[in-house]
Amino acid sequence: MKTAIKVQNLSKAYQLGQIGTGTISNDLARWYASVRGKEDPFLKIGETNDQNTKSKTDIVWSLKDINFEIEQGDAVGIIGRNGAGKSTLLKILSKITAPTTGKISGRGRIASLLEVGTGFHPELSGRENIFLNGAILGMRKKEIQRKLDEIVDFAGIERYIDTPVKRYSSGMYVRLAFAVAAHLESEILIVDEVLAVGDAEFQKKCLGKMNDVSKGEGRTVLFVSHNMNSIQKLCTSAILLNSGKMTYNGSVNKAIDNYLAVSKASESIYNIQLPNNASELQGYATQLRIEDVNGNLVMEIPVGMPWQIAVEFTITKPVKHFIIAIGITNSKEVNICTSWSKEQDFEIGKYTAVFKETTLILASDTYLLTVGLSSYERSIHYLENVASFTVSDTLYPQIDKSIIRTTGTGLLLNPMNINILKRDFDN
Image (tube, rainbow, N blue to C red):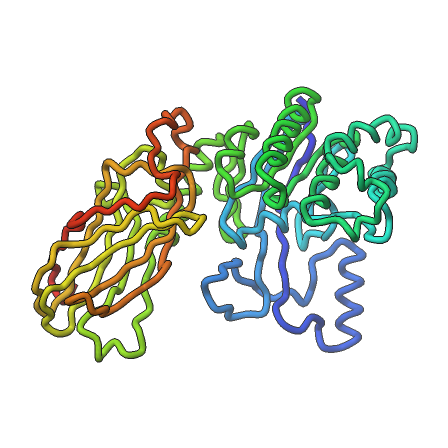
């Protein structure tokens, strides 16, 4: 197989705050070093791009020492958390920005779709922008004309093809942009997660086209997405980025497992900020965790699998007839389930309330959690939409969809479905 893209020791540094060395002579020295292909003589030692920590220097490495090869005809997924360096990598591969160190080699024309309207001129019509994009890719006018009808038909905007694109909606923009990138005869297609702008039907259509481009036409596809199901369906291999470093390159399923393992600790624990009047309250919640039934943290719950929610809370003053309740709402703001604990008297201490669900089967969606602590129906600490979790059929796509019972608008009440355990106050 021929190598389509080869990346060697690729790094990209960005300077925070003011850009420049401070003097004209040093700026000229920096420019002269770049012309000669030398490293920036004024580049300081930087930090990895961890957005959760405060920077100690004014240099961060968005990418650091990236090495990989992609064969012609491969469909490669690039995954990672926000800020991992995915979009920076695609911009370098698309030659929109230059690397700080390292080099890229490859063969073939590159068509990239990195954001809505990439490469479009707002004053030109959709038809004129198709020819503009083709010219940028180095295609002849006859080649573009041969593909024109196919592009317009795929985008589904024939009525507006001679209207300036500045009047297009974001959905129309991305429809035309993807149709141009996928149909013009480039050897490499690079697609960032802009497909989320389109509707569900068009996303499915795009995935089918990218699959045809890769497997049917033998063209190379690089695809960035947070939708692991799409990555599994389309890609033959995957690259995992974390804080600018490549931590895995290989099997799609293994890359997804590693991604979920890296993410679940940070995205499955919600530390709750204490209210300003915490000292005056009888109690308050301190932490919420999304777990499997064995108590292991999970970021994504497979459809049909049992799960549980653990809430840590503190009682600061003795309270009678105490109840903790948990509400679950889907992405359409429909209340799916409300559960509460048995009414009890509580002494000062730290407690864990566990809502374990083995029979409620949720549809694939993102759900919001609301937690309430109360006594005699008087609210003690109320937290609306304090956390979220995702239910997905990515890991178990063969699940029988007929068993899903929570796609309607009915409210399911689970009285006394929360068990509370007392913990050592010092733990």
